[in-house]
Amino acid sequence: MNAETLEKMKSMKFYGMARAFSSCLEDGRTARMTADEMLSFLITSEYDDRHNRRIERHIRNAKFRYNASIEKLYYGPERNLEKNQMMRFAECDFIEKAESILITGCTGIGKSYIASALGNQACMKGYKVFYTNLNKLFAKLKMMKADGSYLREISRIEKQDLLILDDFGLQPMDNQNRSALMEIIEDRHGNRSTIITSQLPVQEWYDLIGEKTVADAILDRLVHDAHRIEIDGDSLRKNRNIRN
Image 1: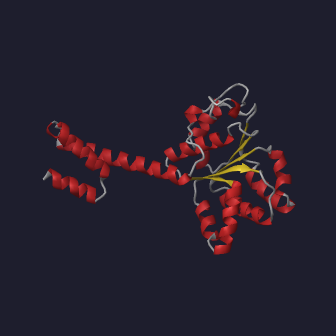
Image 2 (image 1 turned 45 degrees about the vertical axis):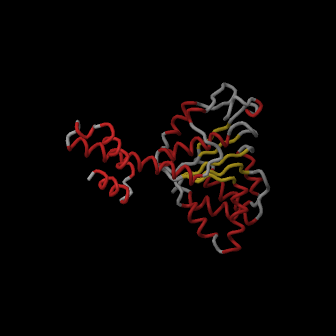
Image 3 (image 1 turned 90 degrees about the horizontal axis):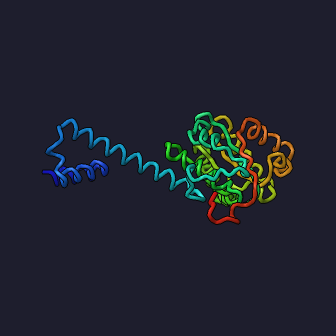
């Protein structure tokens, strides 16, 4: 009967419950548990298993650049990175409030790692996150314009609770890239959160975007109410013991 029950659990995809029940049978806990205790244990095991698989799926779909975590961030005095601020961001209230974060600093300073750490934290809390290098995203969207899948991808991006756009400003923007960025920012403004990393200080973004009307529209929606993390110091890649 127990073997049949286990097979039924697996056929209904109650994998956490099946593992918990199998473990109880092996160590004899079934004889020491009341019916209520057993039911509670099985339900909790199934809930935890589904929760963990959901987190794993969110992290896998996010496609982070780094397997980063808030706990591993480096807060050296030369960095101008405030631990209290990062701990507040780790609560993910900024996502609930649809607020954005702009991370700037020189190359190798750890911007992408910090963005990935915040993204991983958001996944742990159940949010849908998408991480992408901005230039790669622009190239992908241009190809999708040609095959007719552009709007579907824009819609998918819009639905993400947190969008991380890495390496903003590495290349000049053409009309198509400006239009795509405007559409993404417009869709998310006031509705979803965005994290942008850039080697360039925010005051140089206007010239980077290049077209006055579009630049005004993008920066008005993106910059004025955003949180800023402006990292100082030298590249951390010079010290391979520091990863972020």
